[in-house]
Length: 450
Image (cartoon, rainbow, N blue to C red; front, side):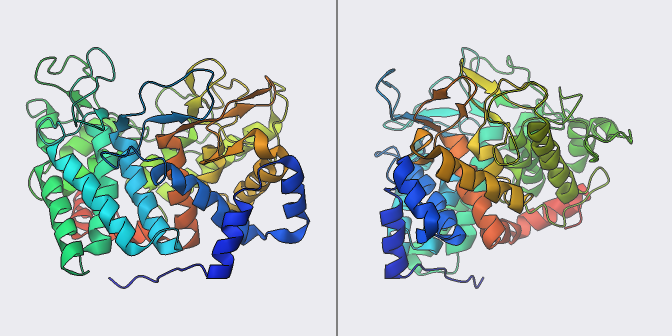
């Protein structure tokens, strides 16, 4: 396919590098006075966040580290642990880096060749990667005592990203075509049908040789897992029938929200799991839609573009209303989703609001709420400055209410920022993923129009 090559000029690249060092409040103030445009700030945020998956990649595998802590309060001993889902987001970010001129095409190819070679040798369970892997050896790192095998959802995120890479390089030179062929082989080896647990009309999240189905987590909607069913139905070798989507994921139609109730004037077509009001955390409108284009996506259950826009606007309006009176919340400072929290990790949402704002929530929502997301980005950068902006972009989360600002990052939060901001700009990843003929066939079989 013929995609536009977006290259920054040497002068603009210099601006990015200079501006990327402007993290103090005074420097941000100077920049705000006219030294950087909205478009340049947009590129700067993409550039810095992209570095998590480039400069900050696990060096042996090239995969995305699960987390990175820039502080020394709690030294990390797991910098070699990579996450399969975050790595899928990361390879999409690498494509953005090539298109934006952050790295050369040749640098990107070399990095992806190393990563794909690692994935070919890493532990897999019926073709499915675990949630966590040792980036130095490829061995599974148990996510929990019973989660020591294949993670179908995290692997779906990885495959979503790899298919974008395949499409990007499939018509390239011999080296690039070879990379695309290796990815195609990995895609074909994923046994989605095995995860039906003996032919049930639903997919299961986990399986391992020793614990088998002990996790017992059926994928029933609605949450972040839609892409898993889309890919399972699209598989050229281990296809899952549409009945599993309709009876399992859609709960025999019960996933559809038949209530006409609106929140802040917005209606959700789908019932969000465990979220009776306001919808779930915003990553539910991000992870499956990094490659899966929601702009015209519809099936018998929802108009996914309108659903995601409404989900985001409800989250935004909740933060503007700020019913719990948390310091800092407002029209320029919003966004609730899963992230680090003041105490541990939490799936922040209006129904689980702990006074913590997570930058990926607003920034990864750029396609849905461009004005509100831009206002948030400018507030984060110009007003909060070095409190929350560091070597890999905005920190994972912060709380003005608790005066809590830790320089820590998570792959699954940084990746969607780069990808969804680019989808807003150019539709790059949407165009790549939707160009897969298998995906087109799978969507039609599930009853989608797009």
